[in-house]
Image (cartoon, rainbow, N blue to C red; front, side, top):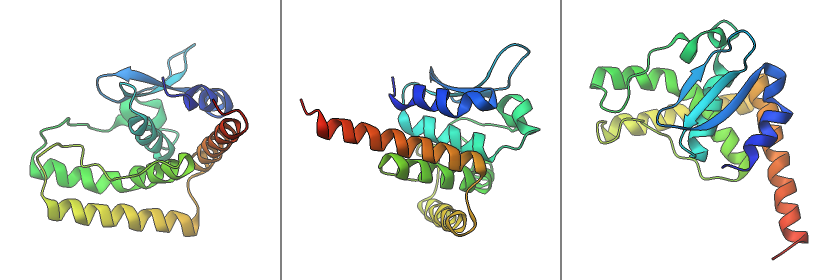
Length: 170
């Protein structure tokens, strides 16, 4: 299990009636039903998948968060060129937020085409530039409020964890 998830769920996400949960074969946003929390579900126990799905949650507006998978389409690996281009148009913002979260945890970030082996390098380079451009724009104008809250929670957890490791070495 990813160690910061419980901290994030208890410190930030529960205030929004949401929890982050892993172990799934594919990511999915499960909208809240009466008496239950919404779930940001991520792939298996992949930390980057968790951060990526949180990026989507931070971008989705209130109405979108009332719908499973935010009411959007999702085509898994094996997309056509046309579907991949559409993917690139909607992914720059969540991946820029994901990059922000990676910075809080001091994790390496790489853009994801989420379409293994079926994309052109030129398209991927252009997409990477769009993600970087969006990230810089957020740095200038501010990240979405929920992204800022999550970033601060992750940064705090990482800082405290690193501090404990220094004061209590094995």
